[in-house]
Structure formats: structure tokens, C-alpha cells
Figure (cartoon, rainbow, N blue to C red):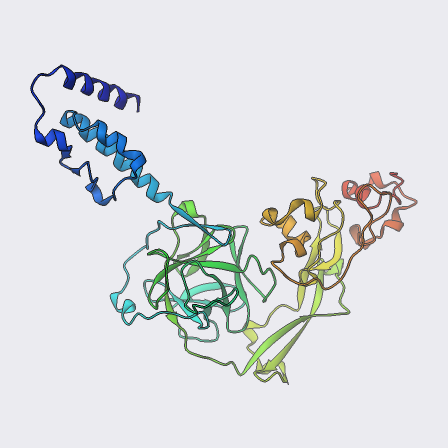
Length: 422
């Protein structure tokens, strides 16, 4: 930019000293790239009024200086286009993306508007659909309705029932499992496992408005990651990598499964340290009408896990709280920053530890399954929920030296009374 300033300075000085008037070509700012007054060069749009001062300053310059100024303006316009974003639902979407590869024109025929009540399939530009068996995600040309992933709209009803670019959606299988992006990885979880991380925004490549069948669209998570496809794998990519996959939207044929798995929490279940801090779930096979069936009537390959993970602290403590409980871990002993879940807030829920400890705060509106009590901050009371390594209660340490244990940092904060710290 200093070089450009010197060139512009020399150009201005030269034009003021010359007696002959400049030609009309110089007065209109015409170059080999286009007309500066309209900036039609290279396909860029007309600049904003705030940027026309540079163009006005070049109307009396020599052709080389005009060319340099035009190139600088073109680069700035391109950078501005790449950085163009729009906020929707608290999630920032990068709208300037391109599809990798060519789209088969046959896939774009017969376009019609999609409604929010319809199930929508996701198809890649080379004709593959998104599939999941409840454990992994892939794309393939197989025509198996049982494993295909469908896009379903979420959110409150509105007067216009059309699916629109920027709407919040879920990506779920016909068995009820949902895709989520957490920590930069694509996972498959049971319904409501992490409601907030299971929500995506569907963003049409062409911009806002009603979505139609055949529209190339991106799926952007709450963390800002976008779904991408490499070979047969489905991955999560950061927006600045510019490698998102534009899926073509297709109406899905109606399909009512004859049977499906049902997973509910076990009321008598407890988080077991000997099971790597997991709690048993009740898994059953049900018919479409809700009747109990034998397990062989449901798809074995899509059978969900029989155990759900409980909260495990960084130092190994297994706490009797799982995802389905939808409650926040009381106190602040579980983190090194000395904060409660309320002090962290929703904006910190992308942190894996906070996400696991603060289920009510990060649960996206889930309903707590139990009520917990905890002593006031700074009080000399033990946390009744705390379990040290080997499932020891605070009272077990009352006659022992708490500072002698490897997990002393969280032990002294969770059990100040038993440890004699107050």
C-alpha cells in the first residue's frame, strides 16, 4: 500500500503539471478490465458509496496508475465477498461457498418448494445419499430406507409452512438416532442425547428464501462446522477451510418401520465405576403401534447401546449423573477454574468438560429428571453427590489425609468438612 500511495502521488503531481487536457478515456476511467465508474470488471458488483472515493481519485490519472487502483479495488471486493456472513438463530453462516465437482443437471429437474412437515433426503452431487446405522455415518448409492439420514425441520410453527434457507433442522435416521457435531467430529447419538449439538442450520448455496427440491444446500452446526464428504466418509470441517459439501435436497418417500428400538432411562440404574462410569438403560423392541416385540424383530445392526455414559471428572471421579438426567453438577470442584455451571453459561458449552457437567445449562431446553441440593459456595459442607476414585464418599476421608491422594485438588474442594479444610 505505501507503493500505491507513492504511485498515486506521482500520478496526481504529473497530471497537475501537464498543460494538455486528458482524453475522454482518462476522464471516464476506462481500462482494459472495465469501467471504473461501474466496476464491472471481473464480475464484481458496484462498490458501496463509502468506497467510491478511490475511484473518483483515479479519473485524472495515467493508465498504469488506474490499472493498479482497479486491481486493488478488485482484491478488496473479492475479500469482502468471501467474508460476507449472515446471522441466523445465533449461528454465523458463511454464505460464499462453492460446490466441489459438477452437479448432474438431471438432479435439478422438477424443482418444487419443500414444506417443513416433509422428510428430506440429502444427496451428493455424484448421486450418493447420506446413511447411518446408528453408530457411523457414510454416503453411498445404496437404496436402503432403513439407514438413510433425513432432514427434519424443528422450531415453532409459522404462517408460511415452507422450508427456508436458514431454518433449524435435525438430521436423523428412521430409527430415531441423530447426527451431531461436537469437538469437530460427526457423531451419531440417541434422540435428545445432546439436543443443542444435534441442531443444524440448512443454508442454500444460492442465498436466502424458500428451499426447493434440488437446491444445493450446506448443513452448518452450532459450533460453526459444516458437513463435508471425502470419499464415502462424512466429516466436519471448519468454515474457514471452505470444504463444505452442498447436498441436493430431495423429498423422501414415506416409510413406516414395522419395528424400532426404544431406549429409556432405567429408574433403578446407577453409574458404576467398574463399568467405566456408565449406567444401564432399558432397551426394547417395539412395533409401529407400540407393542413389545422380541429382539429378533428389530434390526440387529442398528441396536442402540444398553449403557449411557455418566459424568467422569478429569481426575477420575465417577458421579451418579448421566446425560438423560439433564442436571448441572453442583459446586465448582469438577473444574480447575473454580466456576459453577451458571458462571460458565451456554457460550462455554462447546467445551467437552462443561458440556458433560452442565447438562441443564447446555441441554437446549431438556427437562431435569431430578433435583439436587448443594451447599452454598464457600460453606464448610461436603458435596453429597461427590464420589472419589473407587466410589468413595466424602465421609470415607474423614480420618484420612486428603492431601495424600492423586485427586486431592478436587477432593479438598468437594469434601472440605471431611478433609478438615475448614
